Structure formats: C-alpha cells, structure tokens
Length: 154
Image (cartoon, rainbow, N blue to C red; front, side, top):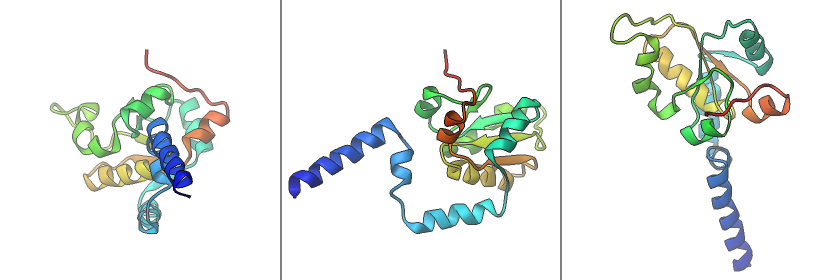
C-alpha cells in the first residue's frame, strides 16, 4: 500500500510540474470555489464563444492572460499579453498609460486556465477603479480543443 501511495504522490508532483495551476486547482478546499463563484457574481463575465466573437471583431480591448509565465509560454490566445494574477496590481500600469495619462476605462479582457484566476484578477482591477474589465469564464483546454488559434512566444 505504501508503494501505491508513493507512486500516487510522485504522479501528483509530476502533474503539478507539467501542468502548473491545473494539478493544484484540483486540490483546494470548497471555500476557494465558493469565493470564486461569489466573485463571478460581482464582475462582468463572458463565455468562450463571446470571447471568440470579440476577438474576431477586434473588440476585446487589451487581452490579458493571467496565468504564470510558463503556462503562457506553452501557448496563449494570439495578441494576449501575460500579466500573472499575483502581479496584476503592480504590472497593469504600463499597459494603461502610466505614468502619463492612465486610462481607467481601458477595455480589458482577462482569461486563464479555468476561469478562476481571471475572475479574481478582474475583481482586483475593478476594486482598483478600472471600469471596463471582463473575465472570460472558460477552460483554456476547451479553447484549444475547439480549434481556436494558439500562439507561442518566439
């Protein structure tokens, strides 16, 4: 039994290294999911089809991938910039005109791996006074499976 437990633990560690965010997202208490669900009620969200339509019409504004840098490097929505969720409050400013004229109404559309991190990042930006921020409630894997475009850094 100990051998099975050790193999399972090793598999979890390997999965978390290969798929950061995904493996960890499966191992959190219900309160995290509840917090994300409550946050989604306080922000503007769109689904994958609505996001794709905005991109096709070039009406998504600044598209921000809030996943970690390594996740972004593995593939992202073409044209997206990467600002990890844990750094968004500090790194957003250059993208909105700081230090000259900050555009607090700049249209921003955020996405991540499963819709949780971008919801929380959207709420943070909203709490900071940004007025035109949208969270994409989708799984990035579904984006890929649907045959939508994926870019990789050069």
